[in-house]
Image (tube, rainbow, N blue to C red; front, side, top):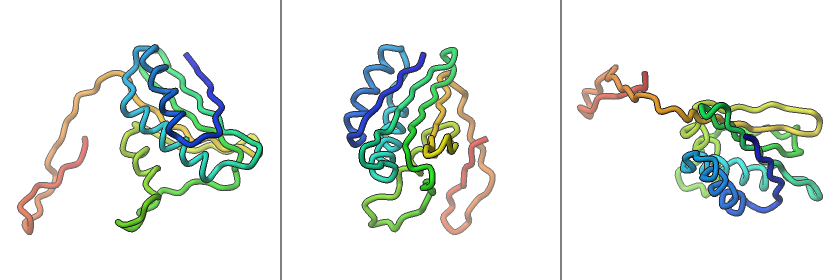
Length: 146
């Protein structure tokens, strides 16, 4: 299943469009809606050229994987994951995508485009956490996903 959406607005209308479609497909919308909102906001703010839209593509693969792609026409301007100042009003979009997606990345082309993509597994996976280190200063174990 694939749906392509061409929008020039900021992320809220794109997110509002996405959630019902994921529901129609029987897919959970929560993480996907946040990822769509962040990628669409980045495309509208950083990737938009006057007179050109960005494209949102949602693809479900065998009910196991949802792939979200946002394509814009600023292939020369690649996004960078940053650690903004704690009081900054922006700059956390890709950190959110990185936290919610199972995988994400960027591919450039054809000129002048770039596509930011994120994938979400649709099959529940067991969640395992293992304590690897112990911080004696705070007496709180540090956990890492296995």
